[in-house]
Image (cartoon, rainbow, N blue to C red; front, side):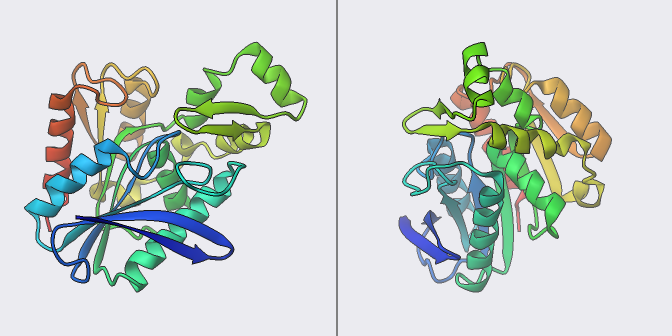
Length: 251
């Protein structure tokens, strides 16, 4: 089952969605699931993951939300600090309003990057964390697709558009914030035992070599999936990833 709800705090209205098996009022374990740049809370990969884990483990729920400027969010300027605020407010809601005893994190691509930023700035609120195709070098991933004309516009103070169903305005300020917050240089060894990374060897958006170096530097388990691309578009590879994450999240 699923239900939409909003979190209205600090002048923000965060559009959220929760997946659950039977009783929404009896969710002791909640997974906060986040997706990549340009996606939304109705993400099919998260939906598949939610269906699997809520039926496998009693009392599990999955919560996802629209990042600023994504999906049905009302904001029109993407700011990294606001992404972190959204995550903080959703975690607070999961704990205080939904009463979860344990919070987990399943994030991919840009969502994994924001989670890593969050861990650097806050204490770790998650019992377990699973990253699929994390965009550890988020600035490099985005800058690689900026044309010369786009750079000219950005340097003039203009914004460029990126995204899929909804076009997102990207400013030079946002790109600079990605460069400054280089999570590949941060230390996550204190959390290493509670994190796994799953990455495809044919990922062109977030190269496997970056994931390998990051996992080695932080002693984080890295599960490589041969021939998987960035979105894990092959259903067999996605099923494998979900299985590994379910096992890791076993209560």
